[in-house]
Figure 1: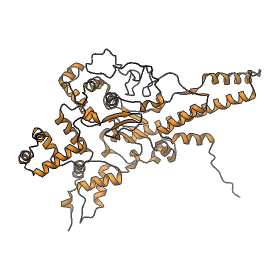
Figure 2 (figure 1 turned 120 degrees about the vertical axis):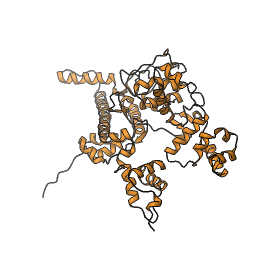
Figure 3 (figure 1 turned 90 degrees about the vertical axis):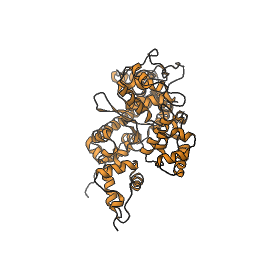
Figure 4 (figure 1 turned 45 degrees about the vertical axis):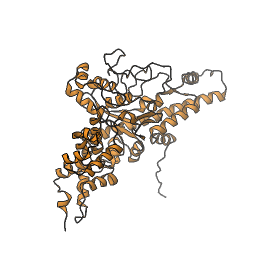
Length: 475
């Protein structure tokens, strides 16, 4: 009989795989349970920022303010000459700051915006960003002229405009507008980019006839734009039902994160991909800052005494066999648990670094540059099995340099670039009934999870030198 080789999986490997496949929230629950059950396991007593790892004096990190940058990041002082900025004018209360629940801590709108823009902007523009955010009024509008803001923070007007556009790109849309007209135009632009069907004349009506719209002079608007009164009425109904002239009111924060417009608007990222000052990408596994685990000092000392006595052949410290067994068992369990947590962090970091290397064009230029990538390829590059990559990335999220939070699966689901997907959709169509650009938008969303605006699809189709539907039709 030919002997068969069997691959034995150790209990440590089983436990490590179980830890690896947990989501961030599930890991938090497992850590809390282990802390409750194992007296030899402790959280580090030093309160640190869960992003940059520096000492945390209160609820807000004064080193990175949520940017995730380590030593050398700009430190904001309470007496800094930033008029209107109230981000740091908070009392340092005595509330405990638990690093495990940092991401669930209640945020003000200013804190939420600041955290997002700091990921999306180079460090040199953080000061102007804080200044603008601090000068948003209760409705979410910018109350200070942009020229004054640029002068106060020693940046150019063009740089101030760049930062303001970043603020205006963050939900709830309309924040940072100078007036109601601009607020609504921002929302129309963002909703159009997201592929929502906006009435064709809504933008022109708001942009060119805002006062007449407010006075319900629908006939005058229709005459000026050479459209019907019903089309003006349809645009008005859409604006009234879907746009918000007070965008800050759409923001709410609670124990489960940030809620915008009644829905969960931000996902808790497990990993950050940030662009450094050298224009290179860096990977930061956030949980490595959230969970500072260690062996309890008392237990560490006791197990050290037991080991020293055994090595020296001396009498063990005065304790019962049951007590010695208790110490050894729980210290071993604590070390075992900490090793598995550290292995999880290292695995997630290595996988993300390979993804960054493979998908750099996507990170720089957007979804149209997403390349074909499989979990097997990532595993091969780092010497891991495909199943390990799957466990490490399932149910986990990455914050991109743009500030967008996406699932890890996004890097793998598109086997082709977006343009290639569009090309394949058109090649497979029935030429007697070719797909319109809007139908392609819907197929991209439903079949491939790719969200594009109709005009973006039209642009990609033209770049592929493919005719519009009416010219592709065959009788």
